[in-house]
Length: 147
Image 1 (cartoon, helix red, strand yellow):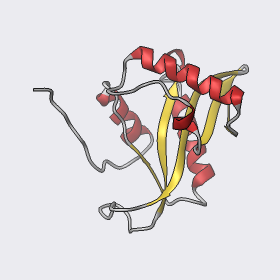
Image 2: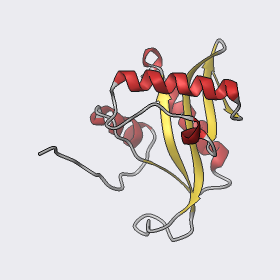
Image 3: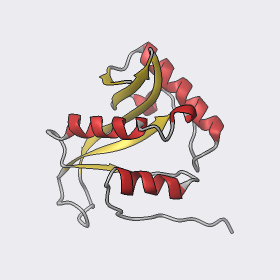
Image 4: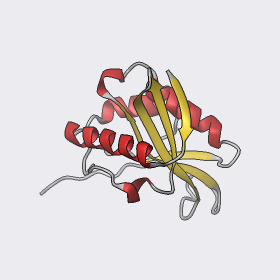
């Protein structure tokens, strides 16, 4: 498996949209919808590939913190992970962790934190992944209940 940062072009866009369609079909996240070009443009894009096939991706960008004083001073640069996805047959094999760690290493000279939100329906597994395996810190939770 190889991991690399890639530039957005038509081929990369097509791969990301296809994987996003697959993710949508899984119905594994609340409110997730297939990406279009505008969702991806302006992000840094990272691919995990095996035998020439994309098996996972992560994209996001660097921001300056605003109204996040509970965890960092105003104006602190941080990398916001917009999406991290691994194809189902490659999950629980270290692909997501390797992608995340690669990105961490790539952005650490530009950002002081990595931040993300998740809307997965499998919250126990995702919290284990982010908190236990990636050693992230829990900051907040937003819950909902249909009435």
